[in-house]
Amino acid sequence: DILLYDGYDVITSEGAAAETIGENDLQPNALVMHQPSEKLIIPHPRMQEREFVLAPMMDLEMGGDGNEITHPVLNKSMKELLMMLIKNNAKSSNSDDEEDEYPPAHRVLPLPRGRMLVFNETIIQGILNVTPDSFSDGGKFSKSVEDALAQALQMEKDGAGIIDIGGESTRPGAEAVGIEEELRRVLPIIERIREESDIPISIDTRNARVAQAAIEAGADIVNDVSGGTHDPEMLASVASMGVPMILMHMRGNPKTMQALTNYTKNGGVFSGVVMELTARSKAAEAAGIPRWLQVLDPGIGFAKDVDGNLSLIKGAGVIRANCGNMPFLFGPSRKGFIGKVTGETDPAERDFGTIAACLVSIENKEEIRDACNILRVHNVKAVKQAVLTYEAIQKAKME
Image (cartoon, rainbow, N blue to C red; front, side):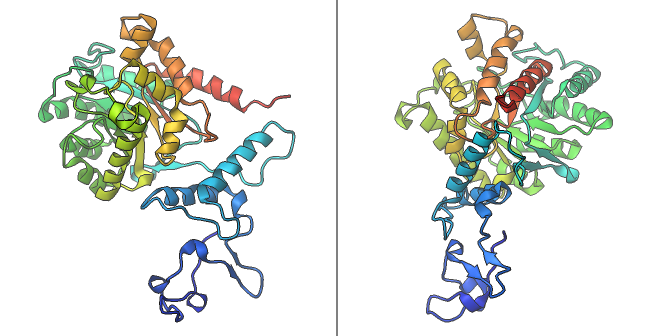
C-alpha cells in the first residue's frame, strides 16, 4: 500500500524516461503498475477496504493545496473512498458477521518523550485554572500548589486524559495578565504534577514565552485560545519545540470578543468559523506546525452569541468535515450560553447542561466516526461517565 516509483515507466515533460522522482511529469495518482510476477500491483487492489491506508491519504489530500488524490482505477477521491468504507462498516456493525479483517484506524497525537494520545475514544481534558478570577471556581486552586495538585490527580483518577493548566482568565471582559505573573502561577503546578504523574498536560496560554517555559517544565501541548494571533512569536515558538498545538477560534480578545458575534458578512457563524479557523490552521502549517500536530477548537463561548454556540455544537460533525476532518476539541463546560438557556446563574451548577452539550458534540451525524475528539470540562467524572455510557449505547448491536 505504499506508492513506489521506478524510472522505467515514468516520463519527463519531454517524453524521455525519468531518472529521478523529481523529473516525473505524471501525477502520483495517475500511476498504475503491474509487475510481470503479478506479486506487486500499485495501487493495491484492496486499498479501498483499508482504513489505515485511506485515512492518512485523506489527510494528505486535505492538506497543502487541497487537490484531490484520485484512485486511478476507481476514479474516486481518498475522502470519497474513506466515507464509503466508514458508512459500509457502520451498516455491518449491527450484523452477526465475523469481525472485519482490518480494525478501524485511529488517529494519534505525538507527545514529547515518545508518548502519544490515541483517539480511539473521546478524551476528557480536565480544566485546572490557577487564576484568582476564574469564572467557574472563583480561584479555588490559585492559592496552594498542593491543592491544585490534589485536584489534578483527582481528575486523572476520574478519567481525564489531559490536564489543561491556565494562569490567565479569558472569560468575557477579563483583563490581560502580565507574562511574569502568568509564569509564576503555572510553572510550580506543572513541575509538581510531573513529580507525581506522567499524564499529558496542556498549557492554556496566549504567550509564547509562557508556552515555551511550560513545555520545558513538563507540559506536552500548547492550547492557545487566540489561535496564535495574540503573540506573533507563538506559532514559530511551538514549531521549534515540535509539540502539538490546539488552535481555537476567537475574534478580538477577552475584553472585546462579545462585541464581535455578527457573522452575517461571512455567510453565518458556520461559514465564518470554518473560514477563520482554517486560515489559522494554514498559518500554523506555514510556520512549521504540521497538520498531524494540530487540534482545532471552534471556540464555544468566544465571540459567539447563544444561537451561534448552539449551532456550532449541533453541527459539530459538519464543521469538522469542512475543516478537513482534523482532530477537534469542544469546550462548552459551564459556559454562559448554558446559563442563558437554563436560567442557571451559578456556573458551578451548570454541569447538567454541560453534559448535554458534550454528548451532542460527539454525536456522529456526518459518517465521521469521531466528530469530536476532546472535551474540555470542569467536572471530569460526570462527563466521563456520560460519554462512556453514550458510546457504549452507540456501539451496541441491535438484536
